[in-house]
Image (tube, rainbow, N blue to C red; front, side):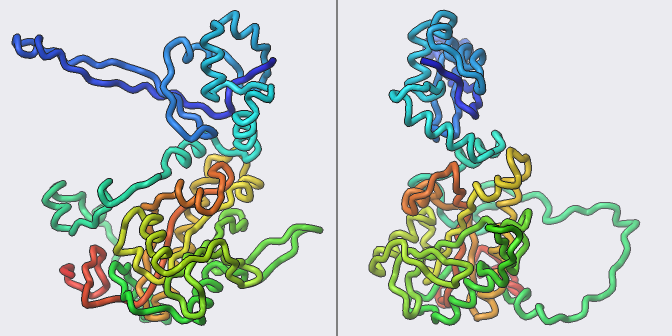
Length: 386
């Protein structure tokens, strides 16, 4: 049998503080820090404590060159090597270790930059609820808790400032100056299908398909995309859309179609929205939500092991969300965008592998319920108090 180390592995030193109470009661200082090591491997999607012997073995075994197991055992010990194989930090080439081998190969084949794979994998949420900190505090509550924030802007070289001319009105002004993030939605209101069609097509839809090779096409959309790849897909969670059964759908940007993933009743759709949005009920009540999912295999087709690939994909989601905001404002509705989502659970619901796909954010919109309006964001023209 042969083995090698997994493709991407980071080791983090951590420490736990303990107190020797008899020493403290005797008047001494007895705060002690005990260090330990944690292995972070994106293909395993979990933190794994390791000991010093395992750390030495992982540092000495190649992640590219296969090595005979017997030689590794002679150098590091049978128990150490067996333990690392069982954990999946070492990859074996026999059927017994096929599952870990397959996950490691998936990561290798998707050309992740190691630090990006680490940040993506271990920045995802599972089962986060309001009790885990997803409440919506008022700005005053934040001031009371954290004190004054840093200034809202830099103030560099005011003595040398060049005063700019007054800004003329433009065609976009009504939408730019009226767009705001909605936090309370009318539970009795739905969104007309033609409005949803325009929102989806003008935000995520292909305005043109261009052939660039015998079997390769690129899409032209209304928002920019790194490398003109447009890797972000839109999965729609419809709660109250006229003519559409509640449920999950994939929006096809070329065919301009909603393709069912799972249909459900309205109560189930509402519960799913709230869970996906980490218990942010003030957003989950919107009649329409869209999950932004990046196909990393498409992004990495061009930007292989690239330092900026993941950042570019996140920027893509930002561009799309702001186009969505403006279209929602045009239709007379507030919108939202949030990255505070249970992305790992969304992956499971959609059947996605986090090594191939990145659930980035959720956006949504609907008719505002002004009778319940309690906004943290400041709408243009507001004094600040909601």
